[in-house]
Image 1 (spheres, helix red, strand yellow):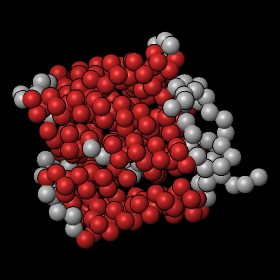
Image 2: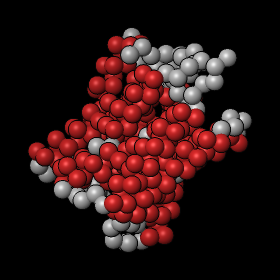
Image 3: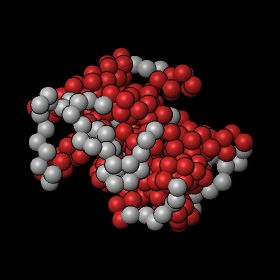
Length: 296
């Protein structure tokens, strides 16, 4: 894929939409793999980024001929992504699956509001309906799933809300960075900055750092590949699509996670969860339709 600065689009870039959907589906694997890592929440995030670094370095050298230095926007993207991973993993531990999923999936709402208020990008009414549908579908899926012991619900809920804020900030930084930098170069610096932050958090929290079996190491290696393929695809597509639209499309992740949970762990998919998946997918399609460029 060609990287670099992308000219403004006068029509929908369906290749970018396809790549974004592929990336979101790949990232949907993450809850399954994290469950198998045998490492702590922050430690799993550290290994995910650290094991992705060699491949990201090769891709960066191949496309730009050099690693270079991190831009300010890349540094901030790395910090926000590390916060996103750490807060989300701990949110699931402290609150219910329902609350953690619903609150952390507020990212499209935050991104759309930010673009509307600060960037003066007024969304179409149909796009707002799409955001509500996609977010509501994710809520239905989480409500049906339920589960999770309430270790500390207020703390877990607060971490979930902050997860949405950190991921929104990461999205906005990546969208800005893609105007001047290639996807692999941005992802390389995001990973190299985020990895030590997560390792420090894991050590301070007293988490198990190393897995105890081949299965655990295999799951960590899978997370590294998933990071390159999934987040790398998102970063590439975000250089060619509106940020608000991209933030809605990634809501296919809980749909993929639910399907994989049924396929691999025989977790039943209830009626509300199935309805939620359909509503989410319809919301994603509607968001893409509503944000298509108008003909000149």
